[in-house]
Image 1 (cartoon, rainbow over the protein chains, first blue to last red):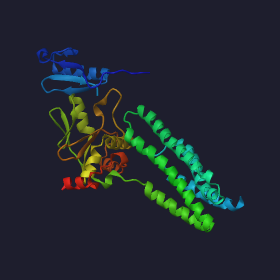
Image 2: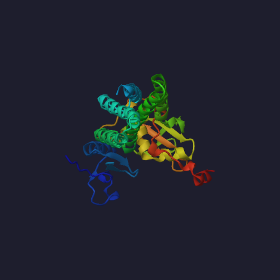
Image 3: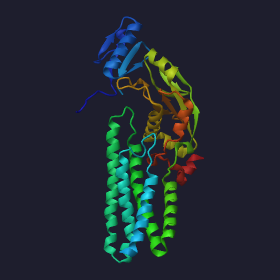
Image 4: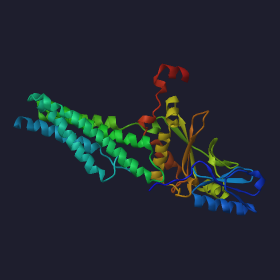
Length: 64
Length: 296
């Protein structure tokens, strides 16, 4: 069985301030930091990726 | 026939004993899986048989018979392919694989062992033919000792020094001392890494060792050996805890990070010291004049 997956690219963005991001990547807006981290955790587990912190309130999920 | 029986038997037995002695099965399943034993013993027996037949074939004389050694070489190359394919297939289903370099190293060793086994059989049968069988046995035993010495291989501990490293975070970057390992986003993961993770620093002793540590295959071999003994908390969809080795580009030392099942840093250091130094990864810059000039 051939398995296809997207590696080394941003699978999702989770942020609290939408003006910080742009582009075609799926973006999730969270109301609080707790919600943001929870979304990140769930997305990482669902997508099999790793959560990276850009240190400006934006988190990205990347599969390596 | 009877005149050659002793010659062939001495060669065959000592060659086979040589293969048995060289066949080991340890914690890394290196060099073989338990069920692979029989296959390799059988191939060793054939190799010993071929080696033992050479002297009777020449003294008969039947020079054409010696050409079967060419067939033997072909057969033993198949062993390398067999081992490479089998370990490569198994690697696909491992969370942390050996890597191609490690597999190639193991496959080469398997092939080489058969040639050593053949040489032992050849030398002991030749000595038996020229002098007597007790001398043949002695020559065979000497060959076995030499085989063990040659096939021992070097270990990483001979070319590097290892010290403990401090795991810490600079913002979201996981560091071992001053080497950046990766960006970790979730605070819960950071806490887990700090609580359960281990970090060590591998200092190369010279420029050759530095090149060895640069090799990705060697790094994979280090990680594979560590994980196969200490375990790892990595899961299929939770890859944040993947063990990693990253180097300091300016100073050349390598930082290793792992979240093991058994967090024992002393064992970790011992394991890394005993990792085989892969042939394909060995730095040889200092063996050239330009390399030595550049190094001072």
